Image (cartoon, rainbow, N blue to C red; front, top):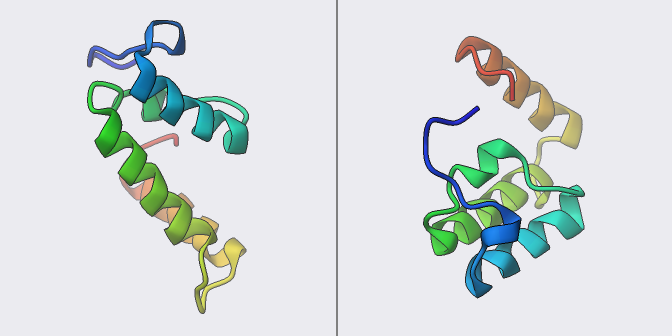
Length: 81
């Protein structure tokens, strides 16, 4: 649970609702770790675009290699995401 105030999909304004809808259409939902950025919808939109590019864009690394790197970094940081 975040100790940062977040805005739920139910309470989202137009701009945030659009960002949430875009994320939901790809991910099937909006994770709590994503909602932490809800106070700044533009930053959330841009961060999610960066994430999609890094994880799914053209790269010499395979999707599996990218996920493996993410798992190791998360484990090293003590993060369950």
